Length: 265
Ligand code: JEK
Image 1: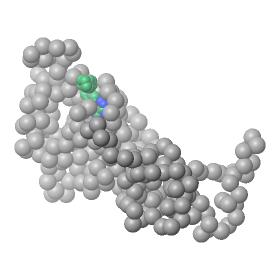
Image 2 (image 1 turned 60 degrees about the vertical axis):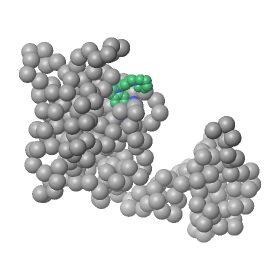
Image 3 (image 1 turned 180 degrees about the vertical axis):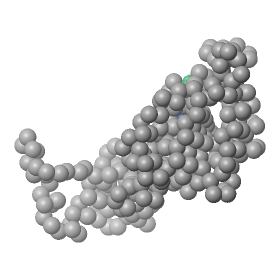
Image 4 (image 1 turned 90 degrees about the vertical axis):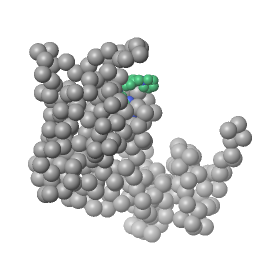
């Protein structure tokens, strides 16, 4: 997969040189290219921002550097004759970035990220590229960042680990809490390694039993309990067809009830 990133802070993406993503790049599985937005300005000050029309606080990113940068990068030769990249613009008002979206992006041959700063990019850029490329405005969560760069790091890591050959253990992707599959919609249970007793805390004996059926059942019980305790809204969305008799007993024991309709709405 090819990934281009256009930003006024290329240094922000140094973490993509290390660990899982860094290794995937070294192995040629990921081709990440970071570009300085200011390279597409033409004034001595390399100005990328201006005051907002209509007034208000902060500054807005000018459309011209973005359009020149996106045109140059998106037109810089596709991946093995494929089409143009998918354009992804992080914004607090975007479509939620979820594991489903990560799986969708992982199928693309080419992604182009456009992380902004200040109060965001002049909206005419989105109007223009929304009709020229496949454009996604996405948010990584309901909190306010100072810019889109951290969101791009999050998305590249979430997408990168899904690419074929990037994770060592092929099973780990299918088991992800939010991924479609056997553990769909459940939080992960607790994990343990050696030593068997640490500061008086024991590893649950079932995990040392060698009884793989009983271990799988125990892990599912723990996942169900944890999901009810920490994320009841996820538990409420569990497919009833995916719950066996034992699951229902565990949920009942965790005193899980489907939340009532909110009459206030
Ligand atoms: C991209 C600039 C900073 C800060 C205006 C927005 C309601 C008005 C822009 N999940 C996420 N949170 N934040 C971002 C994100 C933030 C960004 C940019 C992404 C570019 N900023 C900024 C404030 C405002 N307020 C909240 C009141 C706009 C993001 C993602 N993805």
